[in-house]
Length: 453
Image 1: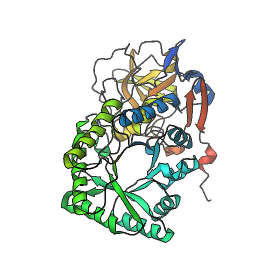
Image 2: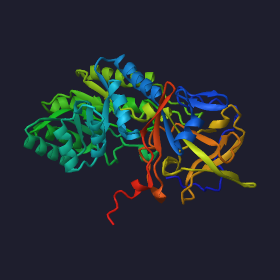
Image 3: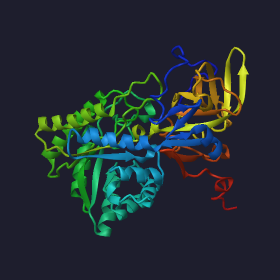
């Protein structure tokens, strides 16, 4: 969690008031008559009609990203599946889009599985993950006959086996392995290092013991291996190193067991552009490094290339999304900073408080003007750290203006809360000049729906 002194300015490069924000905005974003438009829809008018705070998603960009992942992975190998990591942004509408684009859905809880199935995604196009699945979640997954369950421990293997035997089925399972790779990203989103709550470590023979147990348990069809080294990764060398480790382990599995590794799931984590200075890899580069890397390592070890799975989440939806807020109080503290308070904050975007995340922002109704003011955009919640963007350039803000925060499509809606009993925002998909509400705004009645007295 960020622990810096909030009274100190954030170090930054000199501000260019005319900087082009197109690289962090949705792909269909444009300026018309001074307003920000996305998907052929005026964001200022949408904010006034649908209310704020408001999540807006560019459906065309979501579809484009899914197609790009499929294109640049299958370009290098015929048998690659793109599995959307739904934890990044989950609702029935996104599940339908993912399925329509020929991709699978990754669910990390029973709730996510229920939503995917309710959206009409066939269970055969769903994978179930999680480091501590409850017995009920395991039963739901086996009953549904999902494509794969990713087992995270010996206890999970035993539980999957018991349910599968009871139901008279064989459940395909991947074993999650921690390859001992620590990518250069925030500590909270590193997941592939040896000291991790996730998966089976390679040291001390733990992963091999897990594979052997999976191969001998009744009701389990050992299908292969899974890894996920972290999130928001810019350096593709981390994937290359992890792939070397995983394919070497595949060779060990082949030597030590009679179970073939039919699948190798390399997880997701490719970084995206939040700030103008960020330089993430392209999907084309990611596809080449991952798929060619697996092919080359398999050839080196004399192995058959398995079905390859990738799990993009943030890279599918983050830059497709913006959040719209209405400016309330503008408070100038001479010699210190100007606070611009909006009608949302940490309940709809916890990432700045949790990770110290930074965002680019603009005034949507002044989109054609230079961003000449450096302000701190503050939320409305009872926390000093409830700051959406610190010391960020924007057009001169006034009460009633509409602020657009860029690249909020991932891990904002999905991590939203009701702190201070704030209702969670609606989600609107825009495409070809049409806007449709896919998740309605909560009401005060929703806040009390589970109360029993």
